[in-house]
Length: 85
Image 1 (cartoon, helix red, strand yellow):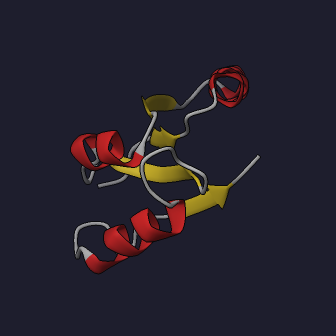
Image 2 (cartoon, rainbow, N blue to C red):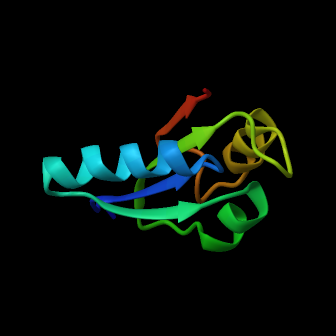
């Protein structure tokens, strides 16, 4: 199912605000925010069309989270863009 929902996994409030502003200016994205990997695992579902993933999360490594998602058949094809600041 394609949607315009993005899951932003990010713990830096400045990056969250900037990303939210940019996506809102584009006018067609609905962003959900998870500030750590465990919250992301609780929030994620198949309706997200994209995950923006911070590599430096407070509770786990973003690469490890990405590997967990890729091992799950529900999320193995979901686009993930990894970033770090």
